[in-house]
Length: 401
Length: 138
Image: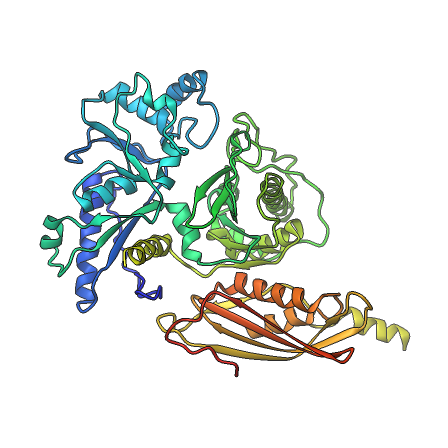
């Protein structure tokens, strides 16, 4: 929650009961419970606007009139559509954020083949469906969530050809005011007036927006299970062959790429206490140049786009400290290469880096990254992605005043 | 004596660094200002290599994080032997502090000592001061 001046006014969270994370009805139920909770905790406050962020690439088909789901939900990391991805690649959708088994077109083709696509069926993303449920009408989608589903200024031609017969949502920029919360829900929640529903965004873009305004040339590295790099640019950059894509922000573009490497590789080799214990001894003043490329499985998206790129994790020294240092140096080299690649294609020159994600607090990793990136590195205080969505809601609300 | 001096040089307990550390803002619900006076900033003139001196005034409204003072001291110290134009170094310090703390508002005023009969003051700002607060020149 943010107030009208943009100040943080609190966080209310609703834990997901097991087995409900892919249920649209549960998404709506939990969203309404959160709104009711805000009402109880802040009875004098008025909810002016709401925006939703959701996992990018989580998709399904729904009835565009009633919103009723017509298929199960395919999560962002559901890779069942491999055959469909290869078929689409043969037809020309081989590169870009919407390509591959995790992209929207392959998943939608898989859903259509397994569940059919009755008339009135439309594409939904997690955030767009929930926004639609709040509005009481479906058929709108924010541009950020649409990117991975096949929208890049317009919907990819492949989605407009057979066998696709589904309705494509109208795409609007994130932060666009969409309309008031529907009357039924406004009444049911006992709200004095209907909050404005504003077009939301993806989780990772919301995490960036949560940070607030950053200086030019400030990269944001998310050291989560995977490594995601972002930097604001005055113009969009799209280089599908290197996994570089852009999200539109109000005045600039958010350019970035996501590597399959990341802290998940560290977690694969070391449990948390061991990682902390070994990290406290690093970096060692001298170490062999191991030149690792840490991956859990073959395949990389950025800064190398090669679905067959093999992990490079040998030789493994007998001393675990050296092995961990080699892993951290490999991850830092990928990060440095990523920012260099973004700059080569026109992003601002990297001058400093803000770090988010679970790996941000690892002091050894930070020291090794400072050597590799040769710029100051800072650590962002904990700012949940929901703040980014709240900022969008506020921006959309200010637009209407 | 020479070897003792050398030992002292290599075993300084603290070193200048560009790393800025932060701690959590204890009152993020409120807009309030933090003023930090930095009276001993020094760097080198990039043209002549001669030392320049400035008094800096940092004013900011924190969001989630506040700047940790020891790291700020070591950070300021890191410019002691670097060549930098007044304008560039003031803006760079502001950007580094913004990246470290991501404040709601930040302003830095660098009043450089006389050079060639001229005094230069550089003022750089990030964001807009919250409406609830008056801008302060304190």
